[in-house]
Image (cartoon, rainbow, N blue to C red; front, side, top):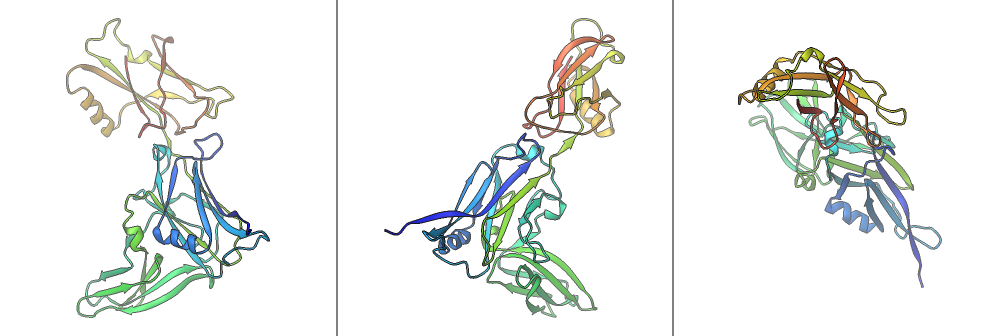
Length: 344
């Protein structure tokens, strides 16, 4: 009887500072049909669990692959978010991203990091018509990053129609391309574009993951770190017109913050009353528009704070020169902002 086993070929972990173990469990990986076909052709299987993506290679009893990886292959996965993770994740530009283990200089990178450089370029199908102002571009040279040979490799050059300024691009392989426009007046201009029929159909992806594998690769380990979003905490203390009790003295309102040494939050944060900016004043005026609110007092932390799981800080409202009113809410990951409205 022929025995076989699957051993790890690729592992990718999603990291985020919100979690005490730095591991995010909120991401789904959706392979494209072509990725599934390539995996099947080379005796590979993929599994995902709690933000981990793993690709396994089928081997025989001697440890040899059933199918040798004898050429460079490209795998594409859509990435989708299952929960409210993006509320606490720093974003850039359009908020959609391209991640790849292949850098543009042709080298591999083990640690991928969410930054502005990962913003998803424009996307089109593999058969694409581009139009330039007539007489401005002579031709377009297409290049794509490759590990062997390293760096941007020329795929081909196509002439632009002199009368219409149009050019038709037809590509066999999907992926990231550099469009080098050879200008009529001399010089060049460049732009990046993802050209893929499959990825065009997956417009609801938050990000695209590209993994390139070459002969000899084995047990590769990658990580993708999502940056945590830091925001100043804001408290809008609302005084209703029909509020009972003593009149609110805004000069005696204070907010106290505290966190224990065992918490991952900063031990001390000042939250002070301040005058609203014009946009905040417009928001306050909106709250007061129905005539039920007498006044709104804005408090804000002096420093931005990154949300974290585990032991939470305590925020308390004080009035009348230190008389404690009681604890009030703090922002959590389900919020799209870090604003708290508290009714006095």
